[in-house]
Image (cartoon, rainbow, N blue to C red; front, side, top):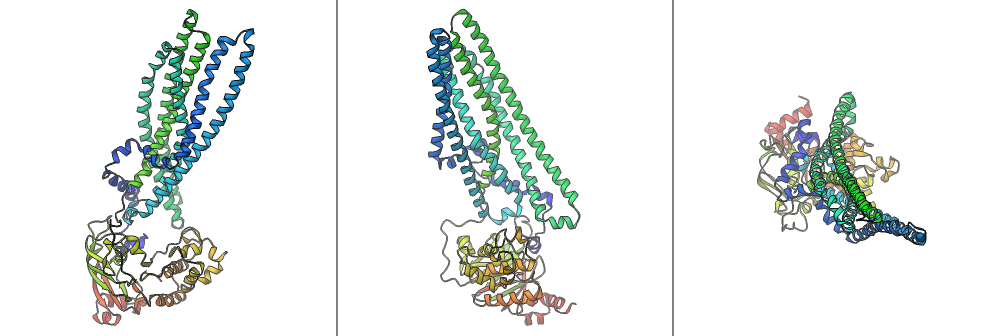
Length: 618
C-alpha cells in the first residue's frame, strides 16, 4: 500500500524503527497460537521430511551409493591386516600383489559410489529447496494484507533466499556428509569390537564425553545462527527499502546517513555470525581433541599388547585404522552437526511463514455468486479499524447500496476512508461490525478469489511489475490472447507509447515501471482493468497521474468502459465525477452527504466547499 493510501485510510505511517521488527512480532504472535510450535522449535529440520518423501526413489539410490562407499572403505583395514600378518615375507609376494589388486578395485568402486552419492544428494537438495521456496512464496501471496501491513518485504526476501541457501547446503552436502560419517562411525565401531573387544572398551568410554558437548553446543549454535539470520534479514529489508526509494535518498542528499545505517546493520549481522562461527570452532576443537586423544591412548595400550604377544601387529593395525575411521567420522560429524544446527535455524524461519494462517480465508463451504454477475454492492452499518490502529475507526457506521450499472463517486478529504471502502469490498479485511454484500450474497460466505474475479481495480498508486508491457497488462486476465491484450491497451490509449518502446509490447518496463512516466504507468493499470472485463469497476484516482491531454483520452475510454458495469469512483478532482449518477461525500469515516453535483452544491455543505476550492480557487 502506498503512503498516500495509508494517509487516505486515516492510519498514518508507522515510524521506521517500529516497523523494523513488526514482521517478527506478527510471526511470533501467530506461532504462539500454533499447537505444533514447541515441537517445531525442537526439531525444525524434520519438517523437511515430506519434501524428501517426494523424491524417495532418488533418496533410496543415494542411500545405496552411500552404503556402498562406506562398506568399501571399511573393507580396506581387513586387507591391510592380512598383508601385515601374512604377506611381509618372501613367500607372501603373490598374496601382496593379489591384495593390492583387490584394493585398486575397491578404490574404483569407492570413487564411483562417491560420485553417484554426490550427484544424487546435491540434486535432491536443490530440488527440495526449490519446492520449499515455491511453497513459501505461494503461501506468502495468499496471506491477507493485514500481515503485509507490518511485514517488511526485505525480511521476507531474505527468508526465501539466504535461509533457502542455508537449507540447501544442509540437505545436500551436509546431510550427505553426516550420513557417510555416521555409517563410518557405526561400521568402524562394530569392526573395532570384532577386532579387539578389550581395546574397544577404551574407545567406547570416550563416546559419552564426545556426545554431551556435541548436543549442548549444537543447541547453542542453532540459537546463534538464528540470531545471525535475523540480523541479516533486517539488513536485507533496509536495502530493499532504500533501493526502492533511491531518488528520494539522493534528492535529500542522505546517502551518507543511509550508508552509515546499513553499515551498522551489516556489522550487527557480522557480529552475530562471528559468535555463531566461534561456537562452531570451539565445538570442533573440543570434539577433535577428545576423539584423537582416545585414539592415541588406544594405540599406546595396543602397542603393549603386541609386545606381550596377545595381539598380532596386523590386527593392531586393523584396529587402529578402524579407530581412526571412527574418530574421523565422529570428528567430521561434529562439524556437520554445527552446519545442520545452523540450517535448523534457517528452516525454523522458513516454516514459521508456512505456519501463519491468512486472516482472510475461504469458508469451508463457500457460497456461489449468482450467474450472470450483476455488480450490486451493499454496505450495512459497516465499521472498521485497521489492525495497526485498532482504536481508530477508519469506517464508522457506513450504509450504502449501489445498483447494477450505477456509477457512484466517492469524494472527501484525505483520511476520510474512501480507499478503505474498496479494501473492504475486495475483502482485504473484514469489518469489525456490519455486513457487506455482492449481488445479494454476504462476501464473508464467498471464496475471496471468486469475489475478486468479478472486480477490476485501478489503484491510485499504479503498480507496474518488472516484466514486459504485454505481461503487465495480462495480469488483468492471465488467459487473455495477445489480440485482447493489445485491444485493451488501445482502449486505455497506451498503444502509442508502448509501440515507441524498444521491442514494443515485449519491452521490459523495469522494476516498478521505472522506464515509464507516471501517466504511462497509470494507463498500463487502466488497460489491465479493461482486460479484466469485470462487472464491478473500482477507480481510485484513476486519472490522477495523467496530464490534461492524456486525462481526456483516458476519461473517454473509462466512460465507455463504465457504460455497462457498476462503477465506484474515488476522486479528489471533482471534474472527474460530474458524469456520475450519484456522489457520496465522506468525512471521518462516515457518509455525510450524497446526491448529484447540482444538489450537493445547492446544499452548501462539505461538497460545496470542496467544489468552490477547486472550481473557483476560493
